Image (cartoon, rainbow, N blue to C red; front, side, top):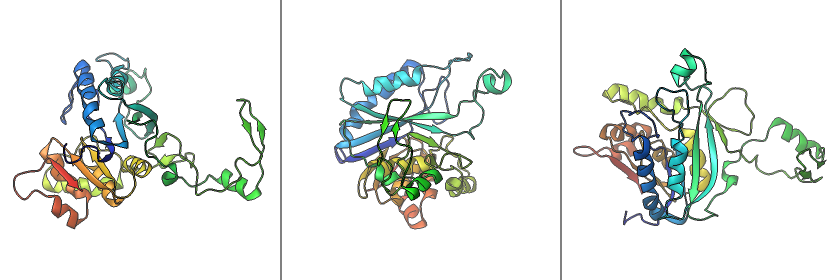
Amino acid sequence: KKKVGGKVQLILTSPPFPLKRKKRYGNFTGKTYIDWLSGLAPLFAELLTDDGSIVIELGNAWEPEQPVQSLLPLKSLLAFVENKKTNLKLCQEFICFNPARLPSPAQWVTIERIRAKDSFTRLWWMAKSARPAADNGRVLKEYSKAMKQLLARQSYNAGKRPSEHVISKNGFLKKHRGAIPPNVIVDDLRSIPSDLLIGANTGSSEAYQIFCRDQGFDMHPARMPRFLAEFFIKFLTKPGDLVLDPFSGSNTVGAVAQELGRRWISIEARDEYAIASVARFDSQTATSLMPKSGVAASTSQT
């Protein structure tokens, strides 16, 4: 903590979700989870630069043996951001939507068929400052076909909208480098609006999966999609900045940070997951990260 205190530009992590049941990668439940997550807020804030950011992914939870969604994730978020020892600001909420996720909770979705499948997680962007370092110009998406046509003809239907917003005659005629992405992140490559953030968490994990099978390691069951890490690292940091993932799992964040020219630190409690994560890197980097003796539960490129 002394070495990196006040130097981390982005803490990007997906901690164990606030589930009502235990997972093999380790997680607290109920009120214990709320207290645990809230207790991390002062430490995270201490590590950040003055204009640094925290992005935490939280999934949904369900009440045990009931088709009722739990308030635990929301209570955990509130406890974290409102921790009196910090002065964190909630900058924005993001949604990661994955229509390809398996139907769950299975009892209520596929057996009794009384609920729709749970297909998204929330990512909460927080900071010590109301204006942390950020630039959506680094995460622009290709213009849609309709927008390209509008820019080509240099005209559109201006004026007052039903929402009472007034669109000026020239408001959308300036061509920038692309479209500003929304805060809905879609993990699917089928027919979807072109301005959404898209990506698949399949090919990017192939080398990791092969390595785990060949070495007899258990794969981490909750791997962060690559496109999520890439979006937030580009959006909230610049080359040379320091990125931290304190619950790194298979270390997607570290691998993407490395490729994008950021310095990074990743921490993982289970030795097996930490060692297997070297498969995400080129051979030279992987060799440098492998423990010389015993095992290493944390890795870094700083």
